[in-house]
Length: 102
Image 1: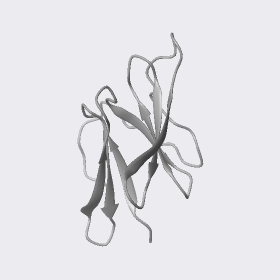
Image 2: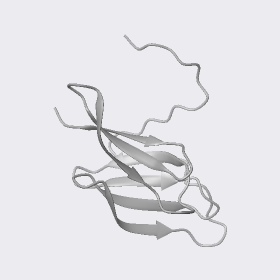
Image 3: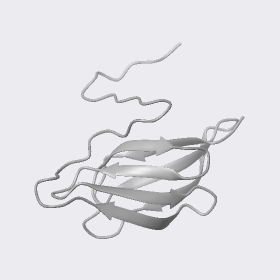
Image 4: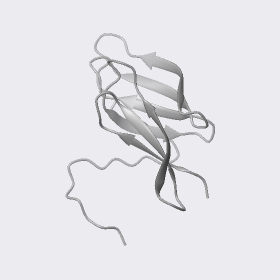
């Protein structure tokens, strides 16, 4: 089983790599100044892509082996708040009560 990745809605944005066997954090990525609120995270099998909820939308390409930034796209004027990334699987949970999953 591969690692699990979670994008966090923090300032600056962050993402963590989790070992599913131990459910512990293996490594993390923290965005640069102005790269806030990771509201979408997508893994294409080679890289992670973090969608950022910023004044100008941004998508940061992350190397999952090193959890470091590879490249970034920043939207043009009027392209604001990347709230979701779509790929093979897209899951967004927002403003739901905390509950256990069985």
